[in-house]
Length: 255
Length: 351
Picture 1 (spheres, rainbow over the protein chains, first blue to last red):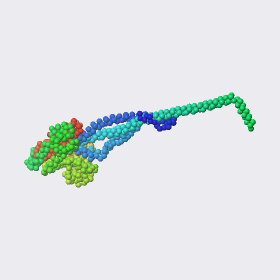
Picture 2: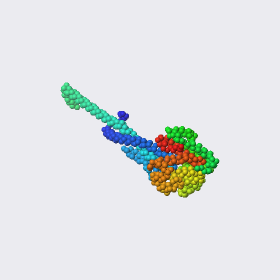
Picture 3: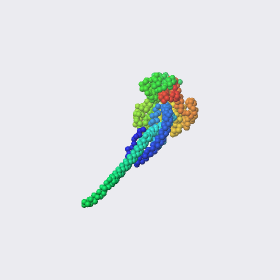
Picture 4: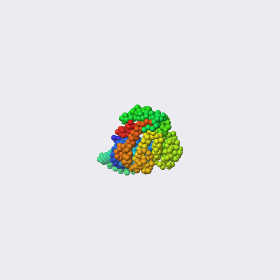
């Protein structure tokens, strides 16, 4: 696993450990949430994919039908009919509006078409020949535009969602494989370090105690020795003591 | 049957009649169409066409062929034939031939006028014009700002001048729906052509008047059907019908008040030639009406070739070529779009 063995560069103290532990809790929570989000997005993603496939199949049919409707119109109304239709157009009647939809915090662009109530001068096009075919062709292509808009909306959502899912998954993985192990490692490290410190302290204390004991023993031994010596002196040179006393007396005498 | 014009017809018209009958022999036959319907790709279509009159026109086209190219080349062939005949023709045949092209001329003028209203580039518009309807001063149409100017500066020099002056008062261009203008002009053109043919007399008059009457009636029916449900009022509709033909005047009165397809059918049932056309269609279905009319038109045009010493063959030839171009367009579109099942729906066999 990547990130294993890594840890944060912190001072190993109890306080830091508390902070890191809090961070670990946060990371776990975040991981859970992101995982949920990712699942939600993936679900949406699959739905959109399904819709796209449907729409594409439908589009194939519709485009075919409308292309053929154009052929029919050309056949009855003459080849030049398209220019006549072009010249009669001022503004677009079908327009596309974009809005945003929120799926699990991801803003998906949605396109929807709407027809603007504008007058078309094409109502009478082909009056003397092929007018009906032109109207049929028009409605066929309106349908084609509708499905195209829908498809465009789905495709854009698809791309955006794809991007969002990738980011989310990256985050989930990053949390799972990098951040969390790192925090755990840090905690481990701090714990280890603290234990180490404790052991050191204990050892030091022991050492100190041992030293102290030694000192005390030494003292005791010394005292004992002194005592022994004194007692030996007392025993062997009882006269001496007297003599000392006598000396003192002597001194006194001397003075 | 023939008047005395047959005596002298060949002095001026003999050569061109021979030519046009030769051209007619070049039209695609049912066998050709059968072959074309079997094609798998546009290149196959091209291969089949190579053996026909279109061969030289398509020979140098690079391989990824488009339907538009085929249609363009077919039109080119028609225009070349037409121009060849026009340069050889003497009066009154030359005038007659010119009359044939006026229909396209009206379309071109209307196209340029509409384009100018929307401030399009004139050269761009000129490319879109039908080559049969070109005239020298067509590019100058764009300078006109309103209809009066248009008439005074440009149209007065063209053959279309009388149609404009008699049908369109000096309203501004914007005021009138361009489609109504086109149809008003076309109505005036058909009436003028009709008068001209009557003046020519003889077999030309008989056959041409019949063909033009059919055209006028077809237009009347189409205008009626296509204007159902639009804002075109009954009086306006009535004004667009040409003042001749089998339906004139009583049929027009009835058509003018029709509100749905079945009423049109009811009106047409009183006229035997059209009753047979409508009999082919099921009730409430108007989709295939255009094709039925095309078929009837082709039948009548072919009959024009049955007689000799008259000018209607030229008209018939040009119209048949146009129908052939439509057929080829349909075939190549069907082939290109993989709609082989529909391929027979659009072909009107000429022979």
